[in-house]
Image (cartoon, rainbow, N blue to C red; front, side):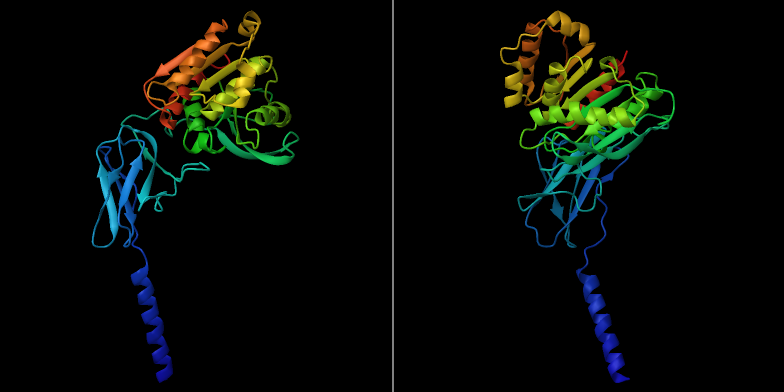
Length: 358
């Protein structure tokens, strides 16, 4: 009996010791009604913790309480969706208390959603919603099975008689096929614009654009030769260029130009968002390029390049705009404030979706 009691005390002591070592349950981030945001991180051993976010002009130091909880409350943040991270003794980490993670292969960041007093175009609103499907397709170009996200609009019937136009939407460098939905909110932007009667119901195809070792040339072949045939074989969509668009951000914006302008017979709508074009493929395609402008202008119903005035690519994008205009192409530049961010990217998408398939 004494042994049993002794064992119970040992087990109880071990349990209490474990509870003492367990980190406290904390909430982070907390978005306040006045748009201030509180961030928290637990560490008894860290020497310095700072908050980094695209809503900040510079990193902000966090302070630690006696329980080892580091925190900071930042002033009112403009409503939007923002990436952020913590720097713990100079090591960047995502917020371990936030399950909303930025979909990216290089940067470890979390996401904070600061809602507006009125619903934003990328917000979840009380409108009919489409559906996102995770699909897999065989890529003969790359010799492997690859994944793709496909948005179908509200009321979509895979066996119905209605056929839909298709937007092929490409993410930025080191992003993934999930970034356009988890960060760019493309599905909710489409839902809201369709509900407002500003955009046509469409299928949006979001492929994984990081192809190695030749991300530009191989991805162009993969999209044209594998992804498009897969979509057209499995979805009730139109199969002509007038019902096909391509758009993308950053590296995806460069891929958009490579894909759309070298295949004008396949895409009547080309929308490039802050394109990164310092690539071998872009130079190969467009150095000393002499397009038949009259023919291309008939084929392209919409050609836009968007960029923010604070974007680090602003100057090269302006040079590319001037280059394409010098070729007598009907290009519509979209110049807005802001940087090379997904906040701006959502704006570009919301500006161009209503112009597609008109």
